[in-house]
Length: 275
Ligand code: AMP
Ligand code: MG
Image 1 (spheres, rainbow, N blue to C red):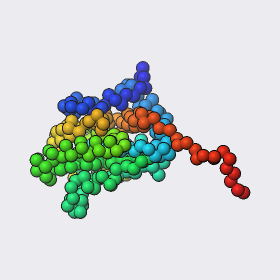
Image 2 (image 1 turned 90 degrees about the horizontal axis):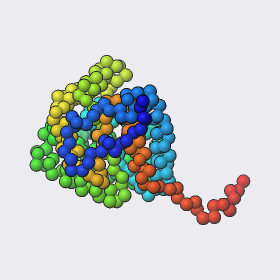
Image 3 (image 1 turned 135 degrees about the vertical axis):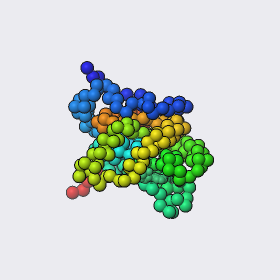
Image 4 (image 1 turned 180 degrees about the horizontal axis):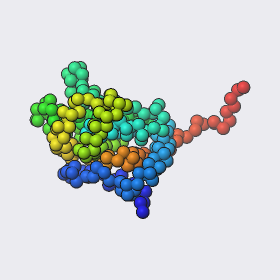
């Protein structure tokens, strides 16, 4: 019998631990015994809870949340945004994609293009890729020397600590898929005309670097999973389970802020609106 319980904290990387991604499940469906129907049926109620909390975050305008989405190609970053945030009022949420830096961005330090997109009070910002690419793709493709990317872990810890100290809740999600699952998803992009637009030749080249990316992710996650800005390794081979875990995690994080709606303006009960 499946229990239907989701424990997002199981997927948190404790600070100071070594990360071996082979030991982290890509296909877990804890609490559901692989029962997709039962699991998927739960998503709408989580979507509603998340929407209610986001509405309060916006109204109270005291806290801010930054969600960082990382993962191998096809790991489901776009799909997560689509399904987890489908009931959220777009007024209070922004998605920021980070693509290859342009010349102006490259002429600055690597955090320059990132900081201005950090959320303001009352808002949620989702980074679809992030400053972590500057220790991932940049490392795997030798875009900067080792001594340059290596010292970035310290910068990133400091940058994120500053954001947290200034009132940001940071949630870092590594969407963990198996290499087999990536093959199936890339094949689907080739076979399904509706998905052709997603296919890039570069994806095949990057897949060839799977092991190097795994090493880079393991180090990046281990170096930057801190108490205040932890990483979560989300099992993501089953999209429905990924959506549930992330939804529940965000609900837990927002609930822990103990938000309330602001007090009504004084004298509101005596106000009459003229005809
Ligand atoms: P996609 O997420 O499929 O739209 O692709 C975005 C591409 O931009 C990926 O191949 C990333 O690796 C790349 N990218 C993002 N940030 C950086 C960066 N800082 N340096 C180099 N490439 C990057
Ligand atoms: Mg892509």
